[in-house]
Length: 386
Length: 243
Image 1: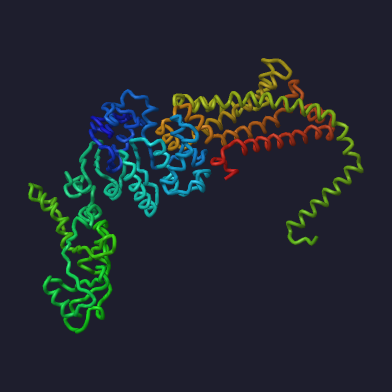
Image 2 (image 1 turned 90 degrees about the vertical axis):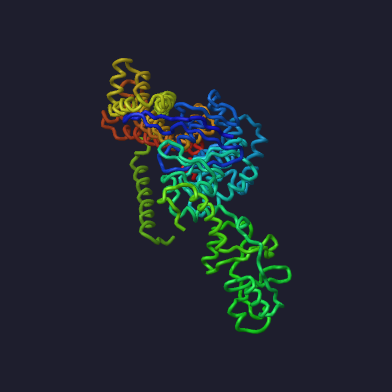
């Protein structure tokens, strides 16, 4: 757990005192990722760096696992906090192995233990130990280097990690991959992480909570979903962007929206049955055909069912696509747009149909949060366009 | 062997020229003239190397710590002005430095070593300082954030990363040192300068060259020696010649 209590930093500059962080109070519960988000110069990095005293606080306190760090020895404090920076900062004079084992060595681990740890870390970041441990940072790509950067920060298994725009310098494709890998690692490791970012999409993806900063002040601290659904003021709103309703698509899983009511036909049914079922359920254009294991195999369109006679197995079209319960709505929406579909069948782990997801249900789910908020008194200009 | 290109032709010509130069020098007796100086060259070259070794190692021993001290953040206010003083010092001709040190320390090896020491000190200090200041600030932040003490940062991060630049400074300084030692003869410290200056005075080119050629060779050897040490000592990850 990380707790910040009225943490303040005032810089003396030739133009007078500048308050970089103004009475920041914040709590990151154990095992959670808190993203510090804001435009440049908003004090998010200063706040982060006060935790490991790269920047000395002017006033205020930092508690780690409930313990006041004010009187701790700076080096001991830092050795127990993983630190990842945007510039990566691997030591070019050391091999990958030496880089990873540097904190364990500082902490006085014995050789066999830290050597084993290096291999363990390489496995964790899915890089081949034998291929990489003896190489130098300059021989690695940017993405690989930052994986090593993360491994170095995690090597001594610190309970707390500070990450200063760790994936900012990596190209978008690799960044997404590393973010996913990191989230997967975090599920097992359960570190308490403070993470600076200026990328709203990264914040929504990575954060359990997001803290928005502006001019040294903490403006809003809430879960990504709350943040997008209920921005506190016009600044947060504009920072999140006009498409923040769309950004929420990332946060909602299919299982939250799926309806398990779905009518199907089997290949042996006649088209007449299919048409009747389409009418019964009020479907607009088609009904799903499943095989005897309830796997979706085709689509009977309403037009075909009305004009043709015969069995479903002879007159079906291909299924535009299926979604699983763990997919997020962004993927679903994308699939719907590309297939010109208003609904998609949803399948479980075995590929069996377990429900359907409709555009109507998605917009309803996203809109309900906004409507709930509109019931409360709000300025009309901040009404959400849908 | 068929000659296939202009380059090859030039090389063949060079070989022929060297061959005839050899024939001529053998027949005219120049080689024997040179060989006559061999015992002198041996004796003076050793003296020469001693002057370089003593003044050079003293300079390294002083310059590197000096560069380190100047590069510390606490020295930031003074470092630049001190470096300027050293830079101005570099512009004083070595001969003048030797003359000055002779007027304080008399004649012989001591003032010569002192003068050479001063001339060698500056490039090494400058490179040590520049090398340490040139270490990527991100590395320093990473090192601090990891929990290294300032000594650990210096020994494990700053020095290894600056080492290549420091060695470059030593190469320059010691090569110049070897080339400057002949001047030490002028204040009575010996060295190959004895043959060079006496040769000039006596209008004896063979004698002069018997001092000048070994001096040049020594400079090349010292340069190559330090380059080899740098190649072996500078960590592979930050060593451009081993990249």
